[in-house]
Amino acid sequence: MIKEKRKAKKYTQEKMAELLGISLRQYARIDKEEDLPRKDVLQKLIYELNLTDTEIGKYIRSITKNQVS
Image (tube, rainbow, N blue to C red; front, side, top):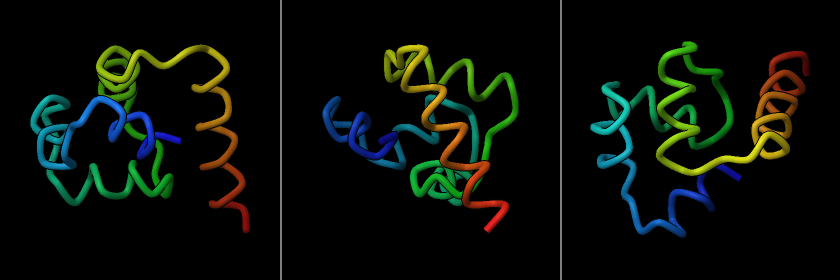
């Protein structure tokens, strides 16, 4: 879902990493929904991609599910 939102805004992974102030490797893990970012980075992600509360919830549940598996 994060990847689709990023692509809809026509942002590259590199651009998102720059906007969020993190490394490309860190952003790639967010894009693949493998890692939950720090609170400050999550807030920037929400802002940059205009994520709704529902989308944020789905994202967090997806990561939690992946980490438990």
